[in-house]
Length: 299
Image (cartoon, rainbow, N blue to C red; front, top):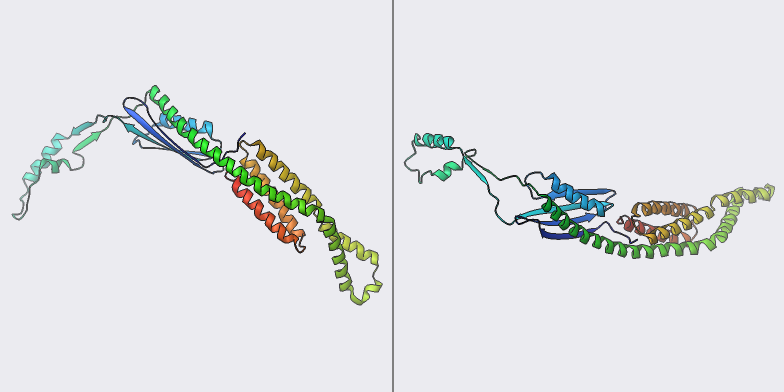
């Protein structure tokens, strides 16, 4: 299965009937869950329209914040109902006629000025009612826009996959470099610890049991041992690569594995402070962080 990004865009336009046309624009960005937002240019609510668009989007997308903008276009002007409150208009005209206008007043009030008074004229457009064939056509138009967005998400997912594989190769190379050096690092820690213990004892070193010094140094060296962390880190990287190759909806799984990889690298960094090793661990952490940033865009 292909990798799928959560970033995509698609648009489509089509005729729903002799009276209506529609354009649909679908945009998606990354989000923890599937969040669908539908916007229309209708003044009234149209739950049947939103249900059609939502069903098409939810069938193709698993995660992401998806915004679907639906604009309905009328091919012919819709009839409107105009109602004039005749009695109210007459009442306003009679009241205006009784007003003494100043001599310097220019112009005169006309019927148009009176009809502009709020409440005297009401214009009502008929409610938009969608037929079954119009809803079916809308579903087709929406599917075309969603399909275009899916193609973009797949293309972006393929690009992200290549970037992630490159960063994983860097992390695997770090483990391959680090693992053979572990016995030598443990021996150096042991010797350095013995030297510190002897320095602390000072002139009384002759009275201290050498075996005890070696035991204490060995205990400290054991605490600095990172063999288990390296084994787990390699296992996480192998699992990550397998899931990445499998593809599909794996964003959450890979994000969890990224957290585990970070945890093991942090432990290595706290235990291994040898010259030349700490710098390599910092580079590995940077690569792991880049992987996580890219994974968070996968569905």
